[in-house]
Length: 103
Image 1 (cartoon, rainbow, N blue to C red):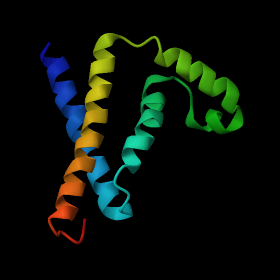
Image 2 (image 1 turned 120 degrees about the vertical axis):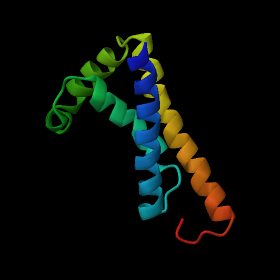
Image 3 (image 1 turned 90 degrees about the vertical axis):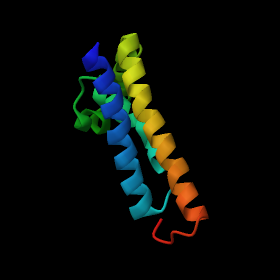
Image 4 (image 1 turned 135 degrees about the vertical axis):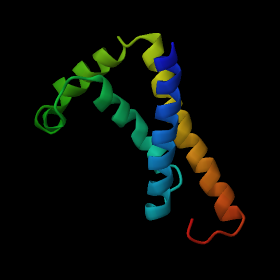
């Protein structure tokens, strides 16, 4: 149970940080929120990333079928990462609105 809670917090913090840095560097507020589903697909499946370019049809169908077989605990943990990307976008918007030019 402790590992579950730590995993939720860890995914939230990691993806908040990654999204925040991407937002600062690329100035695209919701970019990470759009990229996140592909990152989840790469985390869940057991397919090499190169296979997505060699045989995209078979790789995506196998990846999505494996995505549908994850446990509810995995769904909660991965959702925490997505929430982290959303919160990062909201924080960046807030900082820009309040005059922080580097954001």
